[in-house]
Length: 146
Image 1 (cartoon, rainbow, N blue to C red):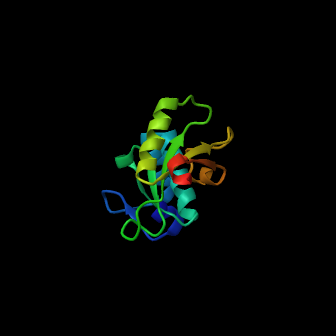
Image 2 (cartoon, helix red, strand yellow):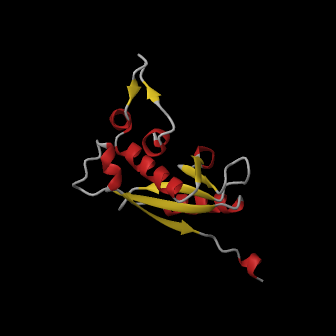
Image 3 (tube, helix red, strand yellow):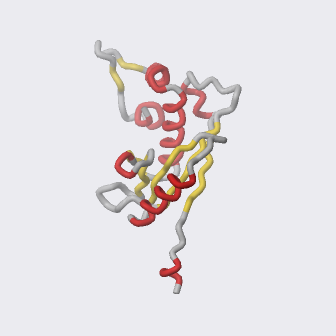
């Protein structure tokens, strides 16, 4: 989706060979995944525009992993988890995830995607009214600070 809509280097075709425009692809994905697709796409787009290489974070229990120049050059620098605004989060799960990521030298970045009430998220144009906020979680080791 990003390569087609944002950069224009990919053509997506239907089964009959006809080119699908980005707005049609957006509606298809939105129809299948709803707001989850919108949040993931907005987060992916945000970090790509910041210069990061974004890959799946499934193997670490997060939404995305961020690489400086790509997985073939460096290990990932951070793990990204998308959380819902105002949702209750389990402190034990957060601490466990943060400790696990810290043990493999990754920073946990929690992202909240803010979608205004008047934004029609069924349209690809909605991406321009959506904002992404993030915060990082670091673990301080007393043994490292002697």
